[in-house]
Length: 359
Image (tube, rainbow, N blue to C red):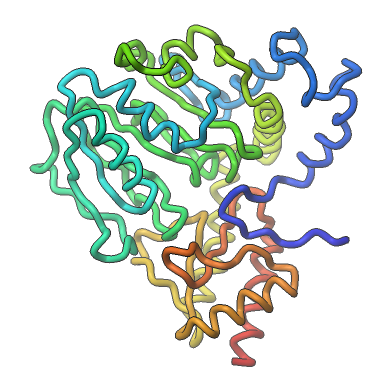
């Protein structure tokens, strides 16, 4: 059976060369006579995989020495609680900018643990833009300032990072992870679920500045305590072994392509192809304010729910799967993460053009 073009928002497609490499090593990793899926996480052979993957993140993202790279579980959603549990212990106050559903979930979770200031929200505009910030509303002694960098559901992203001064910036980067260069030094903490651009579901990567480790509440569960995870090389408990291994292969794939600068050009090209067609279309439209558009998740609609449904059905039959928009917004969404080839976007545009001609 031929492979389809998978536009899922996550779990999403992985590079074929990575899948082929994993298949080749499925029964025997590096002459060990065993699969990564079955080897002990305490063995020397697996420790080499974990340490290599961690170094890969440092090399590809340019992570400064003063930051720790932690491998955790529970998805980004677990960090919605882990962030306040680890950081909300100074003034007990934090600022949140709500630009979508996941930022709002994080905001609601944090309110359980301290005094949380909603500095801005674009909910009134159905999250079709990034909310404007008024620095006068910022909390000067906040323990941190929180954003979701890219909004998977709504197809928006922060065009510029907030200027938060001495207050650490915390960002959920799940759906923009490894898609372009990021200056890690501008963040106190950045974290993301791996299932979009990095690896299969099950791994969460947390990159945290060392001076922000060791502040956790006394009742923070050990598996959510960044200090405990750092002290135990992310192996306080059994880590998500297979996703970490796949992340190692994905990072090597990115390096072979030329790193994140090359990846950014690749992703910008794909996004431009799709947005240019939508903007010139008489049938399809994109509801997002242009300067806030995501490079990873492109949302679009037709004038009616019936036409939207017909498009999704016919697209799936033609090999373009998982284009249905999130249930909270409807329409369509094409997630064009790193592993989506340019040919996939070109083929989708041609299908959309023919669908428009017929409708």
